[in-house]
Length: 386
Image (cartoon, rainbow, N blue to C red; front, side, top):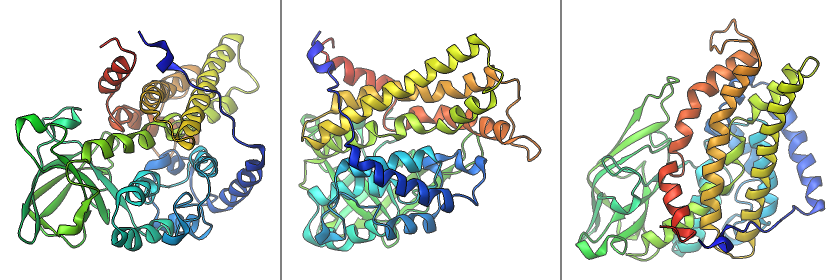
């Protein structure tokens, strides 16, 4: 076993970023005042284009993107502070989330000059919504087995196939999709390419929302039937899709969203038992707080590695795995320690409604950013035990 690969170098945010943190908190205290606790418990699934535009106006989207493309050339650590605060407060960031977190940086790194000029300023202003076309039916979590085909034709690329679990595809402006451009058996990885797809103007693309346990429809199955993409829809180089998408997943798997999705119920639990907690209850809550602090330190370590240009793919997978366990466990702990039944009925308390919502949402966390089984395979290979 290669223990060296398990290292999470200690990394702390610079003290001067506390001024930015206070600025964000002050803004959120006012901007989120109209939102109920139930709405806030949706965290990064909450969808509000106007709120996203407000963040863009303050320079808190596209923070790390070049100024030449509408960005602000601020550090990844400054962005980390903003993201941490909006998630902890339960802000509705779903409209801009994917574009700001990963699609923008991917386009900035691999896109053509025209793609950068056309798309990146709109991401920074909070004007466009992105979705990710990775997973497919009957492929499990083996991303390299995707079969949706992009065939080069005289006037572009003809796409046929299906994507699934595509968050917000029914209301997104763009999708970055991983498609197969070479179906030969020896090209399982080298036959993949990424495409930037304009969902509002390409015919033959049909998103079908999937209703989840909570009744929401944010996941989608997306079918492509002779969808003709322009020649310049290719993102990066043909055949480099696997390399590009694995680098992209480091952004998706390691951020504060991997331990803050259920943070609201943890803070409400602490408040609910503040004056009457038994030693056993305090011990349970203390254990969960310790998990949260540890996960934050690990996430910060990954942020530090990304800042230093180090590939944190293994560490990001570990953060995602442990973070998912933590987030899925919290609603059960919150129900066990406070004798209140979860509910979504309007007559229930804020605690009961938040608990009811998160108990329904938490099972879906395993789907986001790769299932735990796949992540553990990545971890095993990184440690040299598989």
